[in-house]
Amino acid sequence: MKIALSLIVAALFTISGLGLSVSGAADGSSLVFAKCTSCHSLKRVCRGLGKKDLAAWEKTNQRMAEMGMTITADELDAISNYLASAKPGESPVCQ
Image (tube, rainbow, N blue to C red; front, side):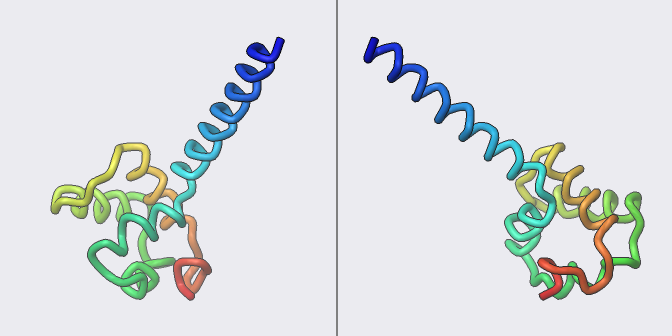
């Protein structure tokens, strides 16, 4: 009985941990902080908000990936979608 309960608790922790990592990967703002700031400041990103549409952000982010940014296709999409929908001066990117 104790073993079964331990396995259930372990499974719940594993499932909840996976849920956090999946939602974190889909969160564009946290990806911007993690990926974009490895090469430049958020001021540069903030200046583009409201000036670029989705296609322009996709092109920019693809260029960054080609220049060496380590990123998955899903992360690239999440960042592009987030930046295309963000308003100029919007937090947390433009603080």
